[in-house]
Length: 206
Image 1: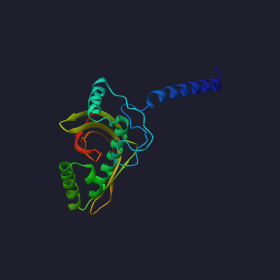
Image 2: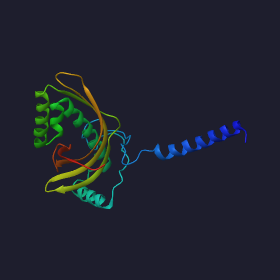
Image 3: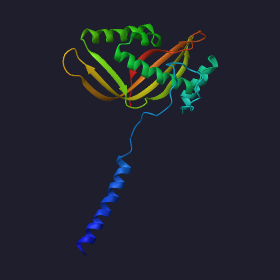
Image 4: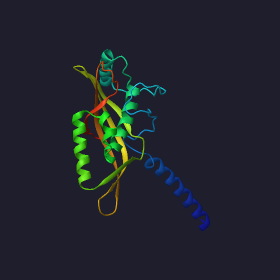
């Protein structure tokens, strides 16, 4: 077989193998952040923005949502998720930058106290932090129910972030990481304020 013909055949085989590897390894795996539209106001559920797609819910969550809607007919899972995602981004950025005024209306008093302690400790060290999202965070409704006179909803967030910390002395350090957390939001049924507030943060599996 001529050498030139062998070279051409090897090139064709290599191209086919590379294409197959790309198809297998070039796809992201696991739960990926979504490129979804966001509501213009943090934690505002049921504004005037176009209705987002209804999220996919398992049977247990769908039944819990039905129970919540029986007490709160205005609850819309899709709009809630969009508002919760916007609140998540606002809170993460606000905590990183130490923006207490942005955080206060979005957190319960106990969570605000905890966040303020973390901010104060960072300020005492003379550090500054900036957080940015590499992609729109993914948000999935895990629970929606009623406890006494309060609506409670739990959302799983998956995010890819870049965090830059500038110490009092020395060079800034930048870290990219993937986070998975469960955030519990709540609000009083029948209250004049329709917005939800963050009541708890827990680690979650991706």
